[in-house]
Amino acid sequence: MTPASAPRIAVFGSINMDLVAYVGTAPSRGETVTGTEFRQVPGGKGANQALAAARAGGDVAFLGAVGDDAFGTQLRTTLVENGIEVSGLRMANGASGVAHIVVEGDGGNSIIVIPGANGTVTGLEDDDVQLLEGSAALLLQLELPMEGVIAAARAGRAAGVPTVLTPAPAQPLPDELLDNVDLLVPNQHEAAALTGRQDPEEALTALLARVPEVVVTLGEAGSLYGARGSAPVRVPARQVATVDTTAAGDTFCGAFAVARAEGRDPEQASRFAAAAASLAVQRHGASTSMPARAEIDAVLAG
Image 1 (spheres, helix red, strand yellow):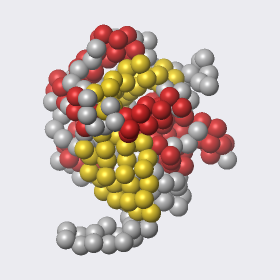
Image 2 (cartoon, one colour):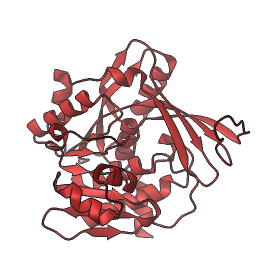
Image 3 (tube, rainbow, N blue to C red):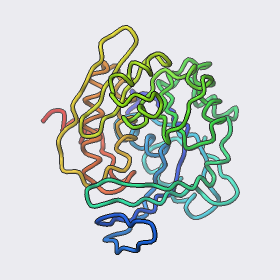
């Protein structure tokens, strides 16, 4: 059960069934290789962030869509079993979203996303807006149609809810979206793609010209937080044996949002999120890898 004092986190985003193949080295074009394992795991950047936030201690409401297929039933059940409010999860005709993921022996991955029902989410309904009201944060990503993401960001701003955007998959971001974003959380590759600056600190400075706060995640190098008018804060990652990096960034974002909503300052929130991500990369899968609050607290205490 979620504690009564848990901060409400709303997530407007994608939900997929991840079809994950594990292999020593991914095949080149025209090549066939033998894998070591296959797993079917609920995922999607929106659902990943929702699950990460819920397990980190948030009271989470999810807004999105699944298809009327067997995957849709399984995906909805996964959210419910993790205590996530699903009244904003629509059912669309046709297939649910699917992601084909190849994970190599060093934990790196490549992903093909087939949107399915996610492609039908082009805006908010009245009930969705009611779910946003009173939330401590609204988490957005870019696996839904851009018009839907913009509509959600505008609704968040109108409701006075701090809006957090993970700009993935990387693509140009219109001003009408960024004008309604309070915190941007790109990884270093997305930050470089958005700014043309390969150096994370230079990219951070450029991004702060467009949004008030930014966290650039740096993989094994940790994270870099910045806000207008203050010095950047760099927090190292915890050094662990990496098994699978799928959804590590989503785990970081979900945990960071909960930590900030609970009143932690940016450095404390970054350390909390780093602890959550360090646990996630030691496990296989997306939703199956995300740690519970007790595990995060134990890492920070130890």
